[in-house]
Amino acid sequence: MKLMNDKIFLYSNILVYCYSNSDLNKQRIARTLATTDNVYISTQVLNETANVLHKKYAVSWHNLEELITDFENNFFIHTLTAKDVKQACRMANRYSFSFYDSLIISAALKCNCTILYSEDLHHSQIIENGIKIMNPFL
Image (cartoon, rainbow, N blue to C red; front, side):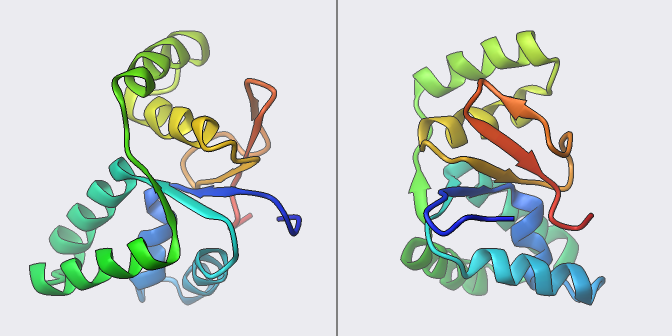
């Protein structure tokens, strides 16, 4: 699991589970991860999380705005740059990840995170000798 000084990056599905009641075990695990120190997300994760919570869980725009303020106060947020997009293109080519998954991995690498928590990627895969993908629900 997470070592004390590890910087971790959360994929949007982890944040969605924090607010979903469909699987209480996953909710508990996701909330534990979201309340640890050194948590990073990107503007892409903000966008995806807001979109899913609004569409799938009918969270109001007002409540989403408050939620995003909570994210700002509790997480380090990486703003994506053109360099991140170019790196994502290289990663998508090299690892055959989707472009959007590559963009999240690129942001996590840019933030010097050692762990990327995601349910959707390859558990235990190490990318660029710098980040390990972990599915916290296994």
